[in-house]
Image (cartoon, rainbow, N blue to C red; front, side, top):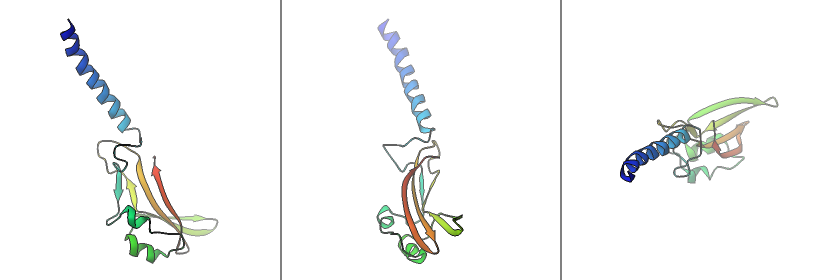
Length: 122
């Protein structure tokens, strides 16, 4: 009787754990084991080079350090034009939807005004 119960309960337990992991992987949760699991990076990007970027740098100086961004989003705030340069984006992981490491540089009037380093949940 015990052996039969074990043969039923163990596979059911594994299926349950697998289902819980699948659900967790599709809720835009932070992956503690691999924080960058769902992060796409610009060619040549590194955290070391990103840490060299400071407010006040020109767009050209930022490109010399990091290269070109993956995506540029123009915006207008307080009647001043700006751009957000995305050096990382969401969507690398094909089998789950995890949080991603967001790395951006905010420019106004051709100069960096903010260096953004956060976890993206979207």
